[in-house]
Image (cartoon, rainbow, N blue to C red; front, side, top):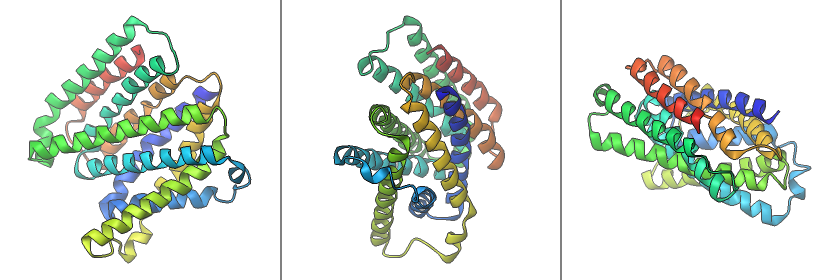
Length: 287
């Protein structure tokens, strides 16, 4: 059952990534993230019965996780706003490498030699992606420094996201998925509104317009986020679920976001990107 939840969640996550990028085409990044998180919290806020019974130790743990996720979303969306989604999403493969290392060091999963071959193939795929899409990508970002900055920001976001997933796996062995999601959506919304108002103070103006409240993609992404998180929390809460396997299944979202994102934003060089993604997925399957 946890595998099915992870697969459906991964597909939804792919659409979430595309709609989130689409939302920032029309509105400020900080506002988009704060609003989609708040809309998600409104959807689940009615189910507070279980949440308020949670001990303060776990509430503090979720608070820390929420800050990590808020930073992850900012890193990822800053990169996605300025760069092509089909060029960035394959870099989510670094999450699999992180989960592989953590699964061995923290959860005592066995070390198997062929998994290292899988990691090597993943990095080859990323190298192939970088080399064969650079010329086309330079039309979007002429500066190589800016391009590297976007990739770095996106990878930092992936690292933060995977750290959050590790916390989920540990915490969900003792608390329910609904308790986790309720407090998480509350805290991440609060952090993102703080970031939004700090950005307004820094720019000395309100970074929201009347039309931004009608940005349909914000609410669509927020609704998908809630369902996506519920499915992943459900899969990780199962006693027999494996973090490394869930992380691998989540890479289905990369296929969805690369193909759907390239179509929606009319991004070039999809053939080479799919070849690179093929190498990366082969490495992921081997791991």
